Image (cartoon, rainbow, N blue to C red; front, side, top):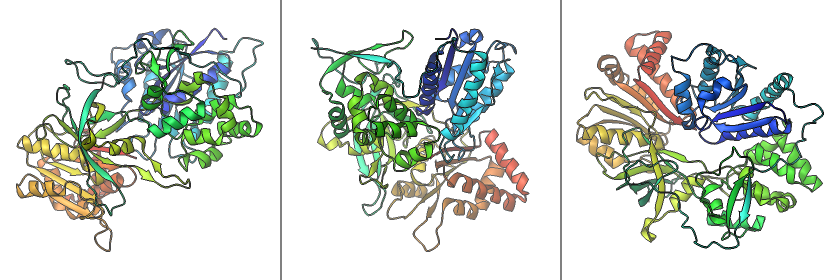
Length: 595
C-alpha cells in the first residue's frame, strides 16, 4: 500500500452519496492506496488542515440545503474567522450528486468547491456535477470525472513501485467478519432503541409511537390509495411546528426476508457478532451485539431496493460461472450502463430478483459480504399534516401508497408506504419508531401577515398543519389553493376545509383537473385569482408557499405568479422575475418539492 491516505468524506441524505464515496474507496484500494471513507459529521474537521488528499462527495437536499450528516461540518467551514490560507496544504476535489429538475441543482457541491478555494485548497479538477436526469443517471458524469481524478491523483501520489493495481474481478476484503454463536446465553431483546424520558427522539433513539388510525381517504374507484395515518406521541418529548417533518425507517416484508434466507442458506434465528476488518471502522450503531439474522434482514439491510451499480461490482468478484461473470462485469463497467438501466433501473428490478437471476454467483456469496452488498435502510420523511394545537399528542400524515406496473410480472411497491399501509391497529398494538426534524418551510410569526399556500395532492400536508396551527393562534389570513383529479375521489380533507371556510378562517380555491372537459390545474387558478394575490402580496406583504411534486407544477405556478405580477402590477417580465427573486431572498417565497 502507498504511504499516502486518500480521505473520502461524504454528505448523504438518501444513501447515494455514501454509496459513491464507498465506491471511490474501493477504487483507491484497487490502486493500492490507503483509504478512509467517513461521513462529514463524524470526521473531526479540525484535522482538515493536516490532510494531504481529500475527496468530498455531497448531495443537495430540500431547497439547496446540506444533508443532515454534514451540517456541523458546513457550519464550521463557513466560519468567517477561518484564515484564507487554512487549507493551503490540501489537495482535494468535490463531486456533487444532484437532480437538475430542482432549481438549486448541486448547490451544496458548488458552494463547497468555492469555499475550499477561498481557504487556499488546491482543487485537483473542476467540481463534478452528477445529475439524476442524465440519460445514464449520475454515473454519466461520475465515470469520466473519476477517470480524470485518478489520472491526476496517481501522478501526484504514485503507488509503490512494482505493485500492479487489482483487477475489477479481484475480491477486496469485506468490512466485517461474522462470528456465529453456538448459543445465546441471555437471548437479547432485540428492538430498535427507544428514547429516554428526558431527551427528544433521534435517528439512533427513535420513539416507538403507537399507530392509532390508518384509513384510506381516496375513493375505492380511484387509482391511487392515499392514507390518513395517525400516531400517538404521548410521553415522547416530541415537539414540532408547521412545516416540520416526521422520519421513520420501514421494515422489509417477512416474505422477502424468508426468500433471502433461502437463497443464501441462512437460519433467520441464528445469532452473530461482527468484527470490523479495519481498526478505523466501527460496527453500525443500530445493530445490537449479538444480533439475529432476522433482525439484520428485517430492520437493517435494504434487501428489496433497486440495486446500485456497486451491487453488481461486488457480485462480479464472486462469479465463477463464465456467462454470469461476463454479464456482471458488463453491468459494472462504464460502457454497460445503458444495459444496466434497461435490466435494472427502468423495470425497477430489486436486489432479491437480481440474486435469483444469477443463481451460480448467489450460491458463491459469503455471509461476510452482506453489509458491503446491501446498503442500510434509509429513513423516509413525511410532511406532518397536523398541529399539536389542534391535535395534542398526535402526529398525522397523508401517505400515498406507491404501487405500479413495469415490464416485470410482479407489481412494484414502495417499501415504506406499503409497510405503513399494511399496519392495522384494529388487530392489536402497532408501534412505529419515529423522530421529528425541522422542515424547510417557515411560517410568519406576525399575526397580520397573510399566507398563500399552493398544495396539490399530498402537497397539502404541511399546509393542513400550518392552517390548523395559525387558526389556533388566531391568524385567519390563510389562502389555500388545492388541486386534485376529482372532487368526489381525491379531495383530501375536503370537509375540514369547508368548515374552516364557513368559520371565516381561510379562503379555499380548488382545481379539480378531471371534473370538466378542459383540465384545470392550480396554476390556472393562481392566474384567475390575480387581483386577490396582488393585493395580498404587494399591499399586505403576504408569504407564498408551494409544496408537492417537483416535475412541472412548481415551475408552472411560478410562471402563473409572475404573470399576475405583470398583469396586476404593470411589470415587465424582468421586473416580475426580480420581484419573485426578492420574495425568495426575504423568505416570503418558499417551496418544498419532491420527485
